[in-house]
Every structure is written in C-alpha cells, then in structure tokens.
Image 1 (cartoon, rainbow, N blue to C red):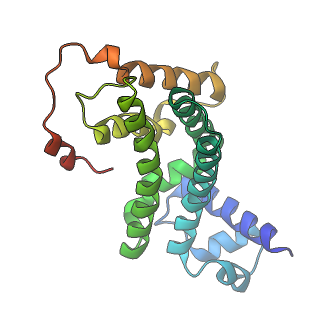
Image 2 (cartoon, one colour):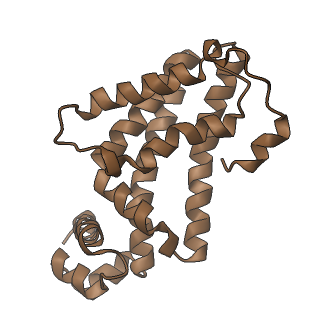
Length: 210
C-alpha cells in the first residue's frame, strides 16, 4: 500500500470518528479498523493519537500557507492580494470543514508541545496576513484606529465557528460565502469605515494574540 494511501485512509477515518464520537472517545484501534490498516502501518506515520489530531490540522494549515505564499508572490496590488487571500482561506476552510471542526473542538486536548507548534504555525500565517493589512494602512486603504491584531482576529473568528452556522448543502456555495465574508471584512476595515472613532493606544494591541 502506498504511503499517501495509508496516510489519507487513516486521516479520513480519524476525522470521521473524531467528528461522530469525539476525540477522547475514539481509540487508535477504532481508527485502524475504520481505515482498514494495521496498527503498525498507522504508527509508521503517526506516533500517537495526539500526532494524528495534529496532522489533521497541519495538512489544512500547510495547504492554506502554500496558497497564501503563492498569492502574495504574484505581486498584485495590496487590496487585490488581501481579497484573494481572504477568499482562499474561506474556500479551503469550507473544503475541509470537517477537519477544521474536529480540530477546533479538540485542540485543547493536544499535548503542550503540539499546542505550541500549532500556535507558532498559525501565528506565522497570521503575521503574513497582518502584514498585508499593515501595507494597506500605509497606503491609506485600511483603518488605523483599531489594532491590527484585532482586525486579524475579527476575520478568523468567523472561520473558527464555521461549522456552527454554515451548511455546504445550503443555498450558498463556498464561493458565494467566501465573497460575502470577504466583502463584510474589507468594508469593516476600510479607512472610510473608521469614521470619528478615537485612536487606540498602541500598547492595546498587546492584549490580543496574533
């Protein structure tokens, strides 16, 4: 059996089991039985159930990071780049809705080293995203009265709870949804939306994790 097949089969089985009965209630034995592989095959690619949960999210995050890098490297104007990134992260989150759902429900059960690794990986993505907003601020496109960290959190908070309110079989597909959320976000951070709000003290941003 090919490596990609084993990894894909195990990951798919784990996602379905974690989603249906919970991470804590799923055993490695159940995963291997559902995947149709041996424990030895699973442990060849995943050191533990903890490693498996991390791998589920790591694959999605790696995909989104690759897309982010490719979009940024196109060298398009800032507004166009940020819009493309926003649309992409929503669409890929919908494409992997179950994986994201499983992870955000169970991330607190990861070992401390894995939680730290996830935080570092997510922060790297968020830093690039924040950099686009900062570039837009320098160009006079986006508001500066709210800390960038808050603007970033505002966008990604919708994605973290996507499974609570979005149904792929509903009337609006992922592209429509991606453009709707992106439009709402970009309007909310536009320089014109700042109005007469009082400037926020620079150190206030420290209270929000990037």
